[in-house]
Length: 114
Length: 115
Image (tube, rainbow over all chains, first blue to last red; front, side):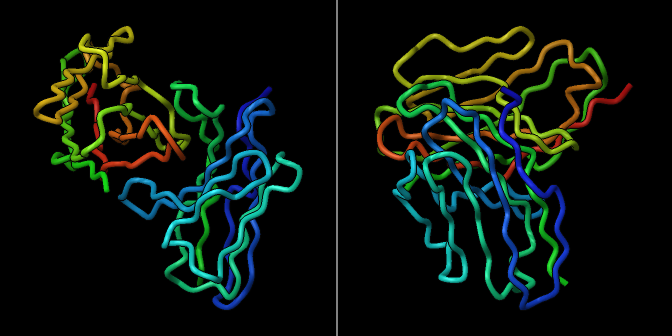
């Protein structure tokens, strides 16, 4: 297993366009998390899945954001009608529920909205 | 709600020196974990060390150790014999043991190790 993979690494888009990011977690991990990190700040929780169920969404996740995890494997995060304020690093992480080992993070997708 | 505060935005030390990064947190929970993560310029967040709140003994991982003061809600990271590869952003994070196990991060400390 090569860890948590995120694609793309970088995305530049024009304001108003839709973008979609993909995360492939560690295969045996049943939890998958999305975080957003703006420049110079710590990551902030957006949402998480246990298997295919989306169990919690942050207030940061406006209705322009949607996340899916079909069949409990990879996950996608879509942002519709992007705004300049969406520019950030989007981090994915996976874990095995109820284990204290913490997460394994991916390298992130850096989104720039111009 | 939990909050995590890192009061040192930047620190800089010479190679081989010892450096301590500060972290305080606020919670009403009893069962939780505390973490230090490292984020180098390559940007992947890497776990440095973990502390379980119910354990009084401070966690140690090679050159990295913590000073966990539960009553004071303080969780500092000490890096001994610092190396150039330790240069990175360091984030302190809190996780409730139950439920979603979301991480709550501090603002980070940018650590530079100078040759």
